[in-house]
Image (cartoon, rainbow, N blue to C red; front, side, top):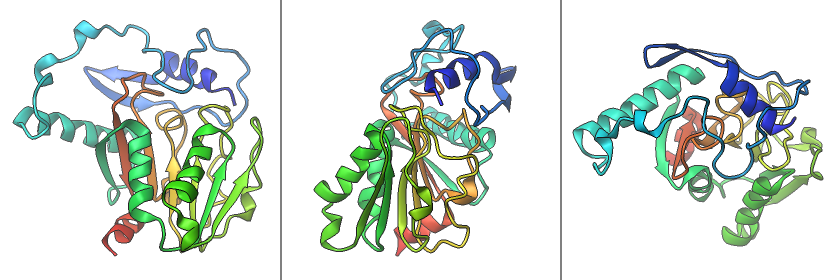
Length: 247
Protein backbone atom coordinates (compact mmCIF):
# COMPACT_ATOMS: atom_id res chain seq x y z
CA UNK A 1 0.00 0.00 0.00
CA UNK A 2 1.34 3.43 -0.84
CA UNK A 3 2.49 5.16 2.32
CA UNK A 4 1.84 8.58 0.85
CA UNK A 5 -1.85 7.77 0.48
CA UNK A 6 -2.02 6.91 4.16
CA UNK A 7 -0.61 10.27 5.12
CA UNK A 8 -2.77 12.35 2.81
CA UNK A 9 -6.01 10.62 3.76
CA UNK A 10 -5.18 10.63 7.45
CA UNK A 11 -4.39 14.33 7.67
CA UNK A 12 -7.43 15.25 5.60
CA UNK A 13 -10.09 13.13 7.27
CA UNK A 14 -9.18 11.42 10.49
CA UNK A 15 -9.31 14.02 13.28
CA UNK A 16 -12.38 15.47 14.93
CA UNK A 17 -11.64 18.12 17.53
CA UNK A 18 -13.38 19.34 20.67
CA UNK A 19 -11.21 22.12 21.97
CA UNK A 20 -7.70 20.69 21.85
CA UNK A 21 -8.64 17.04 22.30
CA UNK A 22 -8.89 14.46 19.57
CA UNK A 23 -12.19 12.69 20.18
CA UNK A 24 -12.30 10.35 17.18
CA UNK A 25 -9.78 8.71 14.93
CA UNK A 26 -10.51 7.28 11.51
CA UNK A 27 -8.08 4.50 10.67
CA UNK A 28 -7.03 3.65 7.14
CA UNK A 29 -8.33 0.57 5.37
CA UNK A 30 -5.94 -2.29 4.61
CA UNK A 31 -7.16 -2.24 1.00
CA UNK A 32 -5.10 -0.67 -1.79
CA UNK A 33 -6.01 3.06 -2.00
CA UNK A 34 -7.99 4.07 -5.06
CA UNK A 35 -6.55 7.60 -5.27
CA UNK A 36 -3.06 9.00 -5.24
CA UNK A 37 -2.32 11.62 -2.56
CA UNK A 38 -2.35 15.35 -3.23
CA UNK A 39 1.11 15.51 -1.64
CA UNK A 40 3.41 12.46 -1.69
CA UNK A 41 5.81 13.69 1.02
CA UNK A 42 5.56 10.67 3.33
CA UNK A 43 8.56 8.38 3.50
CA UNK A 44 11.68 7.88 5.60
CA UNK A 45 12.56 10.86 7.77
CA UNK A 46 10.26 13.67 8.99
CA UNK A 47 7.03 14.05 7.02
CA UNK A 48 4.86 16.90 5.84
CA UNK A 49 3.07 18.88 8.55
CA UNK A 50 -0.71 18.58 8.90
CA UNK A 51 -2.92 21.11 7.08
CA UNK A 52 -3.14 24.34 9.09
CA UNK A 53 0.10 23.72 11.02
CA UNK A 54 1.65 26.92 12.39
CA UNK A 55 4.66 26.86 14.71
CA UNK A 56 3.44 30.05 16.40
CA UNK A 57 0.47 28.11 17.78
CA UNK A 58 2.67 25.75 19.78
CA UNK A 59 2.80 26.16 23.56
CA UNK A 60 6.31 27.48 24.22
CA UNK A 61 6.21 27.22 28.03
CA UNK A 62 8.11 23.91 27.91
CA UNK A 63 11.00 25.21 25.79
CA UNK A 64 14.30 24.92 27.65
CA UNK A 65 12.63 23.18 30.60
CA UNK A 66 13.75 19.89 32.08
CA UNK A 67 11.59 16.81 31.73
CA UNK A 68 11.85 16.70 35.54
CA UNK A 69 10.25 20.13 35.96
CA UNK A 70 6.62 20.38 37.01
CA UNK A 71 5.48 21.44 33.54
CA UNK A 72 7.75 18.86 31.90
CA UNK A 73 6.22 16.02 33.91
CA UNK A 74 2.75 17.40 33.29
CA UNK A 75 3.14 17.54 29.50
CA UNK A 76 4.79 14.13 29.30
CA UNK A 77 2.01 12.64 31.41
CA UNK A 78 -0.60 14.28 29.19
CA UNK A 79 1.06 12.95 26.02
CA UNK A 80 1.19 9.43 27.46
CA UNK A 81 -2.42 9.48 28.66
CA UNK A 82 -3.69 10.82 25.32
CA UNK A 83 -1.62 8.25 23.41
CA UNK A 84 -3.28 5.41 25.33
CA UNK A 85 -6.75 6.91 24.93
CA UNK A 86 -6.57 7.74 21.22
CA UNK A 87 -4.86 4.52 20.15
CA UNK A 88 -6.98 2.33 22.42
CA UNK A 89 -3.93 0.90 24.18
CA UNK A 90 -5.01 -1.63 26.85
CA UNK A 91 -4.97 -0.37 30.43
CA UNK A 92 -2.32 -2.87 31.51
CA UNK A 93 0.14 -1.81 28.79
CA UNK A 94 2.80 0.79 29.57
CA UNK A 95 3.63 3.78 27.34
CA UNK A 96 6.97 5.55 27.55
CA UNK A 97 8.61 8.45 25.70
CA UNK A 98 12.30 7.85 24.97
CA UNK A 99 15.21 9.56 23.18
CA UNK A 100 16.38 8.95 19.60
CA UNK A 101 13.10 8.61 17.71
CA UNK A 102 11.70 5.24 16.60
CA UNK A 103 15.19 3.88 15.98
CA UNK A 104 16.18 4.54 19.59
CA UNK A 105 12.97 3.00 20.91
CA UNK A 106 13.27 -0.17 18.81
CA UNK A 107 16.97 -0.70 19.48
CA UNK A 108 16.39 -0.05 23.18
CA UNK A 109 13.94 -2.96 23.15
CA UNK A 110 16.26 -5.21 21.11
CA UNK A 111 19.27 -4.58 23.33
CA UNK A 112 17.32 -5.27 26.53
CA UNK A 113 14.94 -8.08 25.57
CA UNK A 114 16.44 -10.34 22.92
CA UNK A 115 18.70 -13.31 23.52
CA UNK A 116 16.50 -15.45 25.76
CA UNK A 117 14.86 -17.33 22.85
CA UNK A 118 15.44 -18.02 19.18
CA UNK A 119 14.38 -15.13 16.94
CA UNK A 120 12.48 -14.74 13.67
CA UNK A 121 13.26 -11.43 11.93
CA UNK A 122 10.79 -10.56 9.15
CA UNK A 123 11.84 -7.76 6.83
CA UNK A 124 10.95 -6.48 3.36
CA UNK A 125 12.40 -2.95 3.36
CA UNK A 126 15.42 -1.04 4.65
CA UNK A 127 14.46 -0.42 8.27
CA UNK A 128 13.49 -4.03 8.92
CA UNK A 129 16.73 -5.09 7.25
CA UNK A 130 18.50 -2.80 9.70
CA UNK A 131 16.93 -4.60 12.67
CA UNK A 132 18.20 -7.89 11.24
CA UNK A 133 21.69 -6.41 10.90
CA UNK A 134 21.51 -5.20 14.51
CA UNK A 135 20.63 -8.71 15.67
CA UNK A 136 23.48 -10.49 13.90
CA UNK A 137 26.22 -7.86 13.58
CA UNK A 138 25.92 -5.63 16.65
CA UNK A 139 24.24 -7.86 19.21
CA UNK A 140 25.85 -10.99 17.70
CA UNK A 141 22.83 -13.00 18.79
CA UNK A 142 23.74 -15.92 16.52
CA UNK A 143 26.48 -16.70 19.04
CA UNK A 144 23.81 -17.73 21.55
CA UNK A 145 20.48 -18.35 19.76
CA UNK A 146 19.10 -19.03 16.29
CA UNK A 147 18.29 -15.90 14.28
CA UNK A 148 16.07 -16.78 11.32
CA UNK A 149 15.63 -14.35 8.42
CA UNK A 150 12.29 -14.15 6.58
CA UNK A 151 12.62 -11.65 3.75
CA UNK A 152 11.12 -10.57 0.44
CA UNK A 153 11.86 -8.06 -2.31
CA UNK A 154 10.49 -4.52 -2.16
CA UNK A 155 6.78 -4.56 -2.90
CA UNK A 156 6.20 -8.03 -1.46
CA UNK A 157 5.78 -9.76 1.89
CA UNK A 158 7.72 -12.85 2.99
CA UNK A 159 5.88 -16.03 3.96
CA UNK A 160 4.87 -14.95 7.45
CA UNK A 161 3.34 -18.35 8.20
CA UNK A 162 6.89 -19.63 8.74
CA UNK A 163 7.36 -17.72 12.01
CA UNK A 164 7.58 -19.91 15.10
CA UNK A 165 5.29 -18.94 18.01
CA UNK A 166 7.97 -20.18 20.42
CA UNK A 167 10.44 -17.64 19.03
CA UNK A 168 10.69 -13.90 19.54
CA UNK A 169 9.45 -12.14 16.38
CA UNK A 170 10.83 -8.83 15.05
CA UNK A 171 8.92 -7.16 12.23
CA UNK A 172 7.80 -3.87 10.72
CA UNK A 173 4.03 -3.34 10.68
CA UNK A 174 4.13 -1.08 7.62
CA UNK A 175 7.38 -0.90 5.69
CA UNK A 176 8.44 2.75 5.64
CA UNK A 177 10.53 2.54 2.47
CA UNK A 178 8.50 -0.08 0.58
CA UNK A 179 4.88 0.78 1.40
CA UNK A 180 3.98 -2.85 2.18
CA UNK A 181 2.16 -3.68 5.42
CA UNK A 182 1.27 -6.87 7.27
CA UNK A 183 -2.27 -8.25 6.78
CA UNK A 184 -5.11 -6.77 8.84
CA UNK A 185 -5.12 -8.21 12.33
CA UNK A 186 -1.57 -9.62 12.09
CA UNK A 187 -3.00 -13.14 12.32
CA UNK A 188 0.38 -14.69 11.51
CA UNK A 189 1.15 -14.03 15.19
CA UNK A 190 -0.23 -16.79 17.39
CA UNK A 191 -2.43 -15.92 20.37
CA UNK A 192 -0.75 -18.85 22.12
CA UNK A 193 2.82 -17.67 21.46
CA UNK A 194 5.47 -18.14 24.11
CA UNK A 195 7.91 -15.68 22.55
CA UNK A 196 7.36 -11.93 22.43
CA UNK A 197 6.79 -9.70 19.39
CA UNK A 198 8.77 -6.54 18.66
CA UNK A 199 6.87 -4.34 16.19
CA UNK A 200 8.27 -1.25 14.47
CA UNK A 201 5.00 0.63 13.90
CA UNK A 202 6.36 4.08 13.10
CA UNK A 203 4.47 4.24 9.78
CA UNK A 204 1.36 2.57 11.18
CA UNK A 205 0.39 4.06 14.56
CA UNK A 206 -2.39 6.66 14.21
CA UNK A 207 -3.07 5.52 10.62
CA UNK A 208 -3.87 1.80 10.95
CA UNK A 209 -5.70 -0.40 13.40
CA UNK A 210 -3.17 -1.85 15.82
CA UNK A 211 -4.03 -5.38 17.06
CA UNK A 212 -2.65 -4.83 20.55
CA UNK A 213 -3.28 -8.43 21.61
CA UNK A 214 -0.62 -9.43 19.05
CA UNK A 215 1.93 -6.76 19.99
CA UNK A 216 4.25 -6.97 22.99
CA UNK A 217 6.72 -4.22 22.09
CA UNK A 218 5.48 -1.45 19.78
CA UNK A 219 7.57 1.55 18.77
CA UNK A 220 6.99 4.66 16.68
CA UNK A 221 7.91 8.34 16.44
CA UNK A 222 5.83 11.50 16.11
CA UNK A 223 7.55 12.47 12.86
CA UNK A 224 5.63 10.04 10.66
CA UNK A 225 1.83 9.90 10.62
CA UNK A 226 1.46 12.85 13.03
CA UNK A 227 3.85 15.01 11.00
CA UNK A 228 5.76 15.98 14.14
CA UNK A 229 9.48 16.42 14.68
CA UNK A 230 12.14 13.73 15.03
CA UNK A 231 14.05 13.25 18.25
CA UNK A 232 11.67 11.32 20.48
CA UNK A 233 10.39 7.77 20.24
CA UNK A 234 7.39 6.09 21.86
CA UNK A 235 7.73 2.64 23.41
CA UNK A 236 4.57 0.65 24.25
CA UNK A 237 5.00 -2.51 26.35
CA UNK A 238 2.57 -5.33 27.04
CA UNK A 239 2.61 -7.15 30.41
CA UNK A 240 4.53 -9.96 28.63
CA UNK A 241 7.22 -7.48 27.56
CA UNK A 242 7.46 -6.05 31.09
CA UNK A 243 7.84 -9.57 32.46
CA UNK A 244 10.68 -10.21 29.99
CA UNK A 245 12.45 -7.06 31.20
CA UNK A 246 12.04 -8.02 34.84
CA UNK A 247 13.38 -11.55 34.37
